[in-house]
Length: 131
Image 1 (spheres, rainbow, N blue to C red):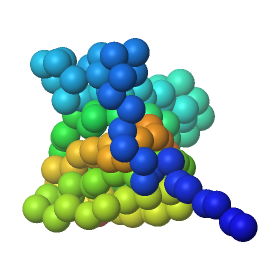
Image 2 (cartoon, rainbow, N blue to C red):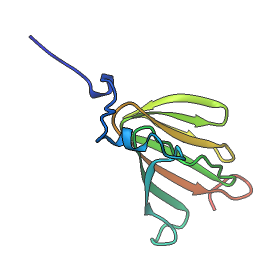
Image 3 (cartoon, rainbow, N blue to C red):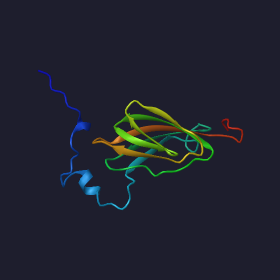
């Protein structure tokens, strides 16, 4: 007999010892850690910036806009919701997607496990090519 269960299908852990319980009364929805892995300020990269962000249960990133930067994401683990401009769509491990310059975007963690993404940005010139 086979028994298969996915942690994302379980009821969230809301025990008083859990992260979810201990952060539910926080003032900000932002609950994430970001690390800049490659950056023109600290590496030989001229234009590319690469980062790793983990969004914790019930958390989100700080929404923002890059007027002269395009960005790509790769979802390493977890599940979430991505908002780009007026569009919202679910994301999960293995997904990759593009954020055009000038579009407001933010990422929401959904499910039981933290959502981890790797992202890369690149500045554009006035004609839309790399600087």
